[in-house]
Length: 359
Image 1 (cartoon, rainbow, N blue to C red):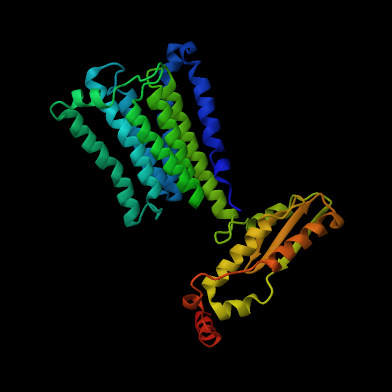
Image 2: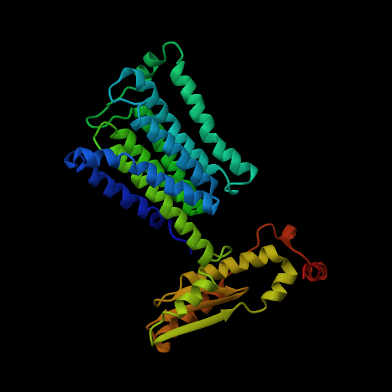
């Protein structure tokens, strides 16, 4: 129905692989190009931040702010590989970054201008300020404690400590579970960002990795925002099927041979009046799940209300009929069981007046 979680992570995984391959060529860049490349992450993340503002996505915009602050810390004067004075900074990033991204996945998206959206965005400056104060006034013995509990380089070419790696692993697993449960595009973008941050922290001392990974992270967030806008325009929110706008666009590009099947749910108005709109929505979701599984090369759409359509490009009616009959029979044979039926049942006598008032 919606894109599967694995497909949603395909773009960030491709960008991650391309970034790792590109970082190997960093040493071969001329110094003038290397200096210019240092500003590309700021540009990439700036574009993602502008799109986040335009589409009103507080979680993605907060992630962009966090990545910009992290890149500034790592590549514009705060961090020097092997410097004992900046060991505290790296330790903070290794623990705080995955937890902040995980927290953003749990926060509900309410837009940029709502109270929750403003608090979501304010979370990043508050953490940056707290980290700045901690770096300038570290607790006594902080370095010794971190060296004992978060020792670096547990393996060759692996900078991140084992405990910080465990925190990152927990955040990634929790993010994947949330992605499977909710299947939201912005959650997939944040999970992908976790992988980029993980690669940065592990391979920080290798030339070019930081720059390339931050460029890829900005591209990932920008692509995710564009995909969110596309889904909002072309995908039905209730059922997850492609909507009427997507169907109209598909009809303009059909080949000379095609089959279009239109269907509606029998007696749906009576069912809605008897049980209420909440149960009616459940029925539409059930029907949509069956339509989404139609075989024979068909693509399912929700045309509107209880009306659905299936488009078979390049097929004949004889080819499509068995798949449509199988779909119809599967819906007819489905045993719909209502959870908490006594609480959800609405009598015809009370539901119809309510429906009339809503009209």
